[in-house]
Image (cartoon, rainbow, N blue to C red; front, side):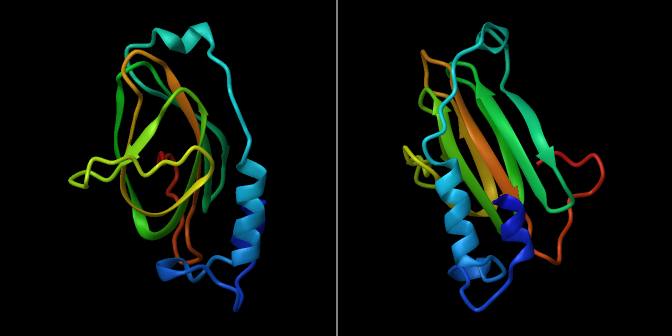
Length: 149
């Protein structure tokens, strides 16, 4: 479904700067991501810092699992403003903030669609958290070799 979002560009576009993304393809991707859950694994529960594992990577696509030990934060990642970032909590209570923003988490209990920009992921104190993150770049941009999302 993520690859379909990259291929289709039509009149049924998303709002704002995401006009390159076909609305029905995006909705299909959100449906596939909803309801996913994870489980705590010992290898990352006591990690001293957040971990990111890339599941799939392409020139315009990055699918990663972000593991956040209790109370940790992943440094803010800067995505182009017209990129599409989808995230869904897998376990715990992960949060996403825009640095300098209101402090209220932008992450819902289900799939959250965000326009790019600076995003910082944090884990709740006292409990490990994890989320699945999908980043889609617009047709004019590509991830450079070795660039982490």
